[in-house]
Length: 194
Image 1 (cartoon, rainbow, N blue to C red):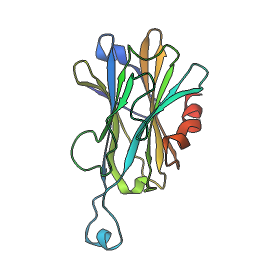
Image 2 (cartoon, one colour):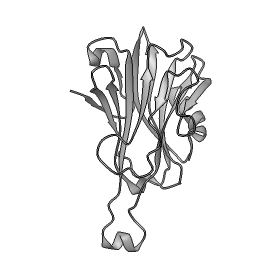
Image 3 (cartoon, helix red, strand yellow):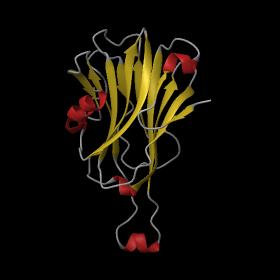
């Protein structure tokens, strides 16, 4: 059974999975806030375009690469993005980032996962947002972090993966920001790891 994490909580993915991991997926899901009659009159509801991204950092927290809707795979091919979902409609993950941990270059120490609203819609218009880590080997969910914080922010540094003693640790971060692209969130992602 998957663990539901709180902000700043860290788990060992191998211990949670019960074995070494070869590949994982980070799934991001969300729904637009449902607008009632008065909400529709005032412009509430409608499609929400959130973007999941992955920032690759070395041991000195220097950016190595960035996977996002403008670059759907890492330069080495170890990380692949499912593509841009511009509505949040439907059940399950709206965007997914697949990580082949065995192909990840040794220089990559940290993966930081972010979400932002490219169109500038705030998280006041988002509900049921979450990120989750899935063992891609058997499709079992290992951990989930609910992004339930409402507000006028347009981005969140969601979580990180870090190499620890030959394995991987997943940390729920949940740091809000007003960045609209993954480029805007790189410095905040580095700060969240310090």
